[in-house]
Every structure is written in C-alpha cells, then in structure tokens.
Image (cartoon, rainbow, N blue to C red; front, side, top):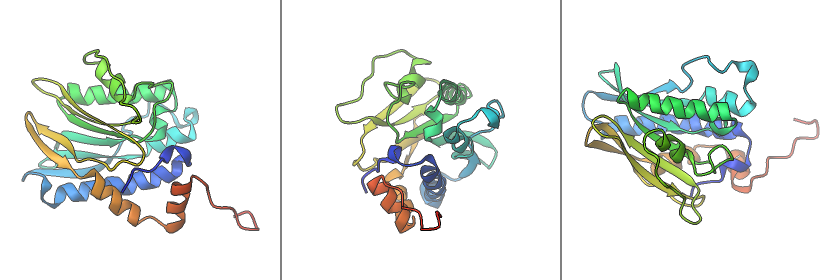
Length: 223
C-alpha cells in the first residue's frame, strides 16, 4: 500500500495511526522474527520532563505521548529501538534538537536505532532528519534523490557506527528495513505489511480524510 501524505492532516490523526502501527510492528517482531531471548516491547518515547507541557505545541504534545518499540534482552537490557517520528518532533528547534540528542544518546550507549520519518523536511531539517543525526557522528554530504523527501534510517553502533539509509516518497511502498541487534546481526522489520494491517483496521472516515486531505464536515449542531 502506498505511503500516505500525513503532513496534510491534523497531527492527532497520525498519532492514532502511529500508536496502532507500533503495536503491529511489535507483534510482528515477536511472532518469530526475533531470536530467542529478545522481545519487542512498547514504551513511551518521552522518558523525561525537560520540555514542560505549558511550553509544548499541540504537535509536540502528541509527540511526547508517542510510543516507541524497544527490543530487550531477557526483558531487561535494551539492545535496539524503533522510533516512528511524529510531526511534533520537528515542530521547533528545541523539539528537533531533543530528538537528535536522544538518538545520539542511544547510539553512545550501544543501542541500535531505526528511525522512520514519513514527514517532509522542514526549515529545521532541510536535508532530512538523517543528516542532522549523522552530522553528530560524521559530517558527510547528503541530498534526497529527486522526488523522494521522506526517509528511513537504521543505525548500527558498537565497534563501528554504520547507517543504512532509504529515501522514500509519498506513494511508495515501505521496504523492509534492517534493525541491528548486535554487531553484524540484523532482523528485517516488516514496515509495509504492518502499515497495511494498521491502515485496514482504521475507520472509513479516517481513511477518507487521509486520502483526500479533507476533514469531515461537522454536523448541523457543530459536532
């Protein structure tokens, strides 16, 4: 199923999809894709209080409540995380800086990271979120291929830091992305099939709003 343009609808709609999609990915990984002793668990992305609620935009508030997937060994030590970006992660310089810093902190702690960004670049990440993250490790030239301005990036850390980057576009199918579990050991993450399953389970009115970019008209009483 082609990727939809989530940037043209309110952030709350993507938040709903985001939460269900993370559950779908977690279940898929736990259904025989992960080696014995590893489990994919859902946890909240915001694990600190540095951006207090009164200073957050609505988009940032959704981002602070978003789920991420943590792959843990024996339900304890986190070895990898999957983060699906929310529009609020890019809604201010503070928000995008916080996202980059948390990603780098994972890598410094030898936690491998897969970032899924289905939103276009902003003035705060004109070359995409991968460029901002990778510049903290190694400054290299990067530009999106023509017509592709969303990005998937998987980072391996440990002995050597390596990035596997896949630019994508609205209308593309999502490729399986490698999630590193240990140096040189990967598991494919079924982004496309889980996206499809989440989409099929979404309400019809929800699907129509995403496909057209037009929210439903209110009833006569304003509801």
